Every structure is written in structure tokens, then in C-alpha cells.
Image (cartoon, rainbow, N blue to C red; front, top):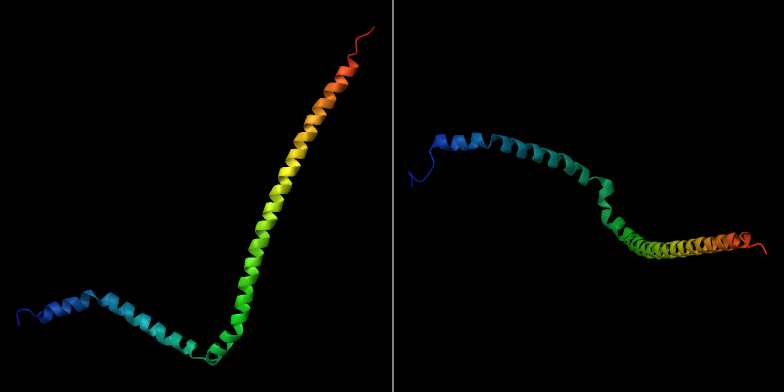
Length: 113
């Protein structure tokens, strides 16, 4: 058993090698202790009561967000359709303008009798 266990020097070396980690853990424990004071303050003791009151508002918010998303998608579809109609009308007006210009030019070049 004595041969399987580590010598005192080896144990000391392991502790020294992990010194930074031990210091880091100690600092984190101090921070947890400091923050524990914040969690146990008077306003947070009523948290379950406020959570129960807040839950219906959260549900309303989720419902409104879904409605907004649906309305936004519908608006996007309507705007896309509007843009397509305007583009088609613009193309049609350009075609009519070209046709009208050709007709006007044809009337100006009437052969003289």
C-alpha cells in the first residue's frame, strides 16, 4: 500500500500545480457568496407572486407576437402583389407608348397624292 500511495513531495507538487485553479475556484466562491446577498433581498422574496401575475401577460405577448407575424407576412404578400401589378402596368404603358409613337410617325409620313 505504501508503494501505491504518493509521497509527500508528489502530493505537494500536485497541489502547487493546481494552485491557479484553486485560487480561481476560491475567487468564484467569494463572488457567489457576494451575489447570494442579492438573491435573498426583500424584493426577490415576492418573486413567486409576481411570476403568477406576469404569466398572463407573457401569454398575451406571445399571442400578439404570433398575430404580428401573421400580419407582417400578409403585408409582405400584399406589397409583393402590388409591386407585380405596378410592374405589369408599367410594361403595358410602355408598350402602348411605343405603339402610339409608331402610329403617330406613320400618320406624319403620309404619301402625297
